[in-house]
Length: 212
Image 1 (cartoon, rainbow, N blue to C red):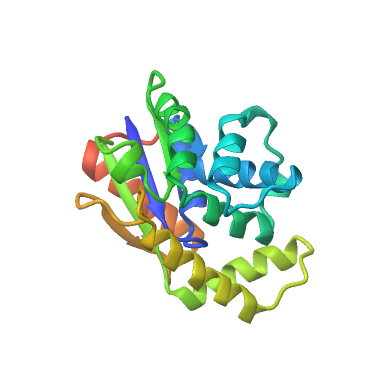
Image 2: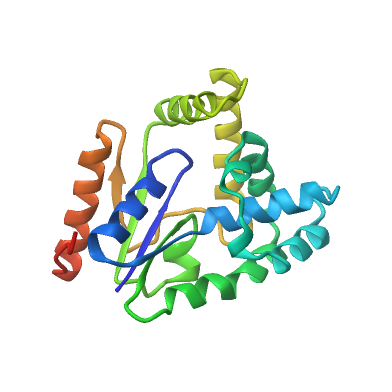
């Protein structure tokens, strides 16, 4: 069983995807982490995220096992990841890695922005997670502040709006809900309620029963 979880930044898609993987005993891949890690590698090498060739080279050299979760979760890494994700060469460099993960025996849960439309268009379940932009900005701001970042809510709201626009407008694999995806709006849901709603969606679509 393959579950595709797409959605906007700070909508809760990552938390939901991890919970679904645990509930149904599946492997999980946060595809956004790949782009963030490639962006960090590029910045470390002194490269410019706007340089498509340099970004693609960083993506091709990426070792998923060496990803530093702390470093890729900064606001800088997220902003740079959104820029390099607009490069078709970067997306192609990471395409096979994501497809191979999805094809593993037993299935998998993948979350990102183009899983249901590009990476796994034949996924058994497609969920698109979204929430009110103001609430998403506050969630992201609280997450960054908790991690020690010195950022303002207004700055994060502006950055989030910019990322939403860039992700939705890019020519190659834009962020959008697949026609056969199910929208899950988490604006007024607690984490537990959002996860329960997602589990119910998977069960309704596949009749699969949670194993955990």
